[in-house]
Length: 281
Image 1 (cartoon, rainbow, N blue to C red):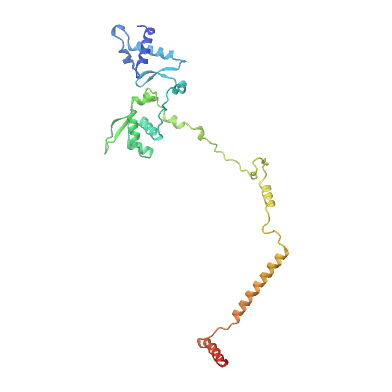
Image 2: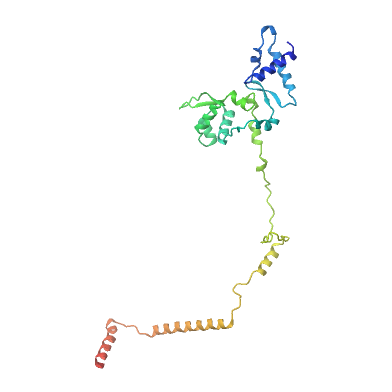
């Protein structure tokens, strides 16, 4: 069978199939009398892929076989056909999946050791339900932890033919987010005036530090230099002198009063006063 006769059959089979088809599966469509081999089917697939150049669809080979799919360039418009929003995955789930993809087979304790946090059971359950990972064995250590690895469904979902198409870790490390970049050169020291209170007021030119300090010193009022009326000053001085005289008088009276030497002498004045009071009566 000629390639031109084989192309529409292969194209129709790929469009009618609900999942990707391999060359072997496509070969099962033909009988022995058709004399169609795997080499002819491969050439027909190459011709179909070339025919898709410049179109909105492409013929892509993935892990499960060949399939027609929408090109990434037109995907934003085609995605509006479905009202359901695509699933969003957490950072923890994607980190766990990446470790399994790059370090497989790997155990759950090893993932936790690398990430530094405990791996949630819901994350592992979600990955297994989506058939992105599976248990490929058990580590020969105490506890027999399960070894996880990726599946073909993982490769199909991420549009990969094999794990070799994953980007190397060296390229990922070299990738730099432009938003995180910044200039390491320190900025020069600058002394400027305070911003004006009025937002519409224009900001003056920059001045040297010495001139700015001089202006601030001239503008600042002197401490306690405001004038006081004369009569208030005289009244304040008189009050101060009166208070000082009263304090001196109290101190003098305190020093002039004799202190009793003994208990008898202290009691004697009281007896004299009593006798005098009796004679007067």
